[in-house]
Length: 78
Image (cartoon, rainbow, N blue to C red; front, side, top):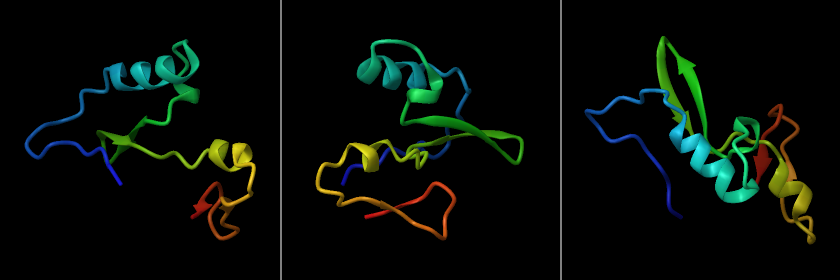
């Protein structure tokens, strides 16, 4: 499985261009709440978070193969 990470020695500038690209690719509009990639503040530094555990994949799975983990607020079990 491919995974996005921040390169060592670089810092996220929180410009939101990655969030824009994600939401525009899937929803044809800039809406940060719809992007799979979110930028969060962690200890005063911007950090990209790839999966925000939104549950959209769970709701669209026709086979019900993805379920929410009751031990995690919006988590997913795969």
